[in-house]
Amino acid sequence: MTILVTGGAGYIGSHVISLLGAIYKDIIVLDNLSTGRPENVLFGKLIIGELNDQKLLDTIFCDYHIDAVFHFAGSIVVPESVTNPALYYHNNTELSLKLIKTCLKFNTKKFIFSSTAAVYGMPVGGVASEETLPMPINPYGRSKLMTEWMLEDVSSVHDFYYVALRYFNVAGASSTGKIGQSTPKATHLLKTAAEVVTGKRQGMSIFGDDYATPDGTCVRDYIHVDDLAQAHADALNYLDSNKKSQILNCGYGHGFSVKEVLNTVESITGKKLAVEMAPRREGDPDMLISKAQKIKNVLGWTPKYDNISYIVKSAINWEKKLK
Image (spheres, rainbow, N blue to C red):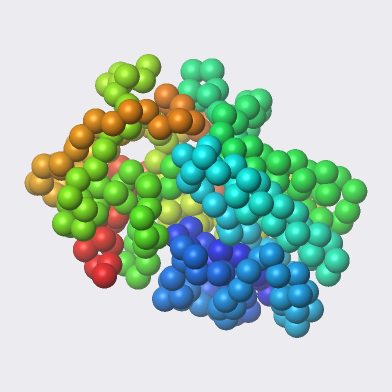
């Protein structure tokens, strides 16, 4: 099997490649390195280029006879999507359509899509299952949901099957210690906190402490990146033997508030974080937690790292190594 991974030099894509590389020899990585790093690609052939380059896509699909696609390339910063929505509809929706059409052109039948829990918006009670009606509240979530709809419609009329994985809050670094969150100017909570405790940032902000949660700060379902990578490998195994598309949540089914995560960072490191309160960011729901039984039933996914202390330690250890 030959696999194409778009955005494979980035945070999540590189962890998936690290896992797949032990199983599959033929991995092609397409990345423009706008946020990814070439040293993150531990296996496969890295092609530096743009997803918008149809000639390049045609060459890759023709020369390497792509059997399956993992699609990570896109923009992911919620506040930026609010201020620059056109960028997100281009990067996340328009370019996804170009990739899907290329799959159809070259008869590539398996597609695994990096979606997001942001498609749910503000679900009642802050908990979302796959049956929860998607109601995204920002362009980031809408751009991803539109791609899910395109996949659904295309799959209904072609010999083409997909698994869309709706990520909750991905965090931590590889258990191997070889890769982690390396994105410059990342906005992820734990990445920011790790930069503060390692002296790479002077301080950080909590964006809003007046949410309808126990301590007033946002509550999220944090999933370790290695468990998320395993979900992708399991999704490919599923598509190898099933001609039925799936949309699946990727989370642990419980959450931690911003303050709880930062308290864990301080407890583990013994360092007091320099934190200031800031206004809410537009597009942030109070609480977003998964119901994640379906992915276990359908894919046989079994998470190994459902422990907030482990997640925090892995992130900090990686940040110490990162130059």
